[in-house]
Amino acid sequence: MKSRPIVNLTMKALIRHIITVILEAEARLVLRKYRPKIIAVTGSVGKTSTKDAIFAVVGEALVARKSMKSFNSEIGLPLTILDCENAWLNPLLWLKNILKGLMLIVTRVHYPKWLVLEIGAGKPDDITRATKLAVPDIAVITRFGDVPVHVEFFKSPAELFEEKTILVKSLRPTGVLIVNADDERVLALREKTKAKSITYGLNAGAMFRASNIQTAYEGDAPVGTTFKLEYDGNVFPVDMRGVLGVQPVYSALAAIATGVYLKLNVVDIIGRLSSYTSPPGRMRVTPGLKGSTIIDDTYNASPVASEAAVETLKNINTKGKRIAVLGDMLELGKFTVEEHKKIGKLVGNFADFLVAVGPRAKYIVDGALDSDMSEKNIIEFDDSRLAGKYLESIIGAGDVVLIKGSQGVRMERAVEEIMAEPERAAELLVRQEEEWKAKI
Image (tube, rainbow, N blue to C red):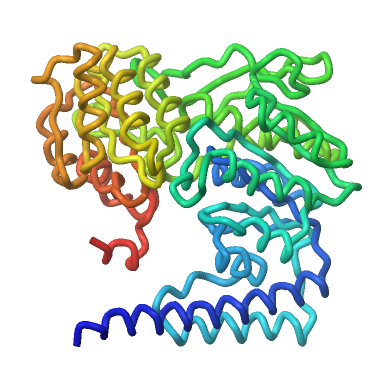
């Protein structure tokens, strides 16, 4: 009896493997038949938001398709190529996906000319496998960070970074490499390919540079981010509503660089970004109860992304309280304690309240206490929904609440408890599919 769960897990893994192999084979044949151009995005911070921003720029003009949500796994990539949804545990839907792939192969349909694909590295050889399936014409590399997410499954951050360089090495020589110039290791990737390279960033010398980054306000509430784009001796104003912080700026710069390389008009590109809505859970501004404002960054968390989010909260002008609601950062391995304490020290220097969620978040608390944050302004929870219910009792008009944590901590549940329009949760929050809601 005790062996039955193991048998069940093994059987599920076997079935998943068989389905993945079939879908990969179909995806390979579809790419061979329709020959779309590939824009591949990787990095350790901002992959999904960068992929979505690029699609906002090129999607309509170039007839493109993008990875849905954050489909970047071994099965997510074929699903995107075949234009199929995740069937979760429904065998009939998986069969439907397989049949749809078969129809793409045996008939001719209107297939996109460009695919904008997010390529992740959750474990060794993930990118090797992805590039054997889809060879990029354009590779976009975001930021990496000293301790990236998923590092737990690699021997070191250097090994994870080396995995991501495989995308660059696989780039077609006739293509282009678009890199974040503010990350020295990413910038050095230009030496790994014979393809042309384009740089973007905040530092002087970047071909596409952002300066004068400001938070936009309506009344006292933060509503978006503005910056100046410096490109080819010209300066263009960029206004992005609904997102805060530096990460959306980086995503916009990568998208602008991609669009200009593809000979789209820079003014048109900026216009598309101005009307673009950031994906849920990525530094997204959401109205909160009692006149508060939520910075919803609940999609995932890594040290570099968490630091950027906390710095954004620090720099917000508000007459109310600055409240940091931070969950565990997962998959950091031996770096777990140190990196959580670093974030806690940052928060402890300025926040009015710290709400910590999850067993690892106790180290965030330790860091905050080391920064002399008062213990009476810190509270810990094991459950994100309980944290949200507590927040409801302390928030008020003008407060700005940053909510962030790794996917496994499900911090979007805390957002749902204090958002002004909970009836719009399915539209505004991450992980609102029934399969996700069923998970503990």
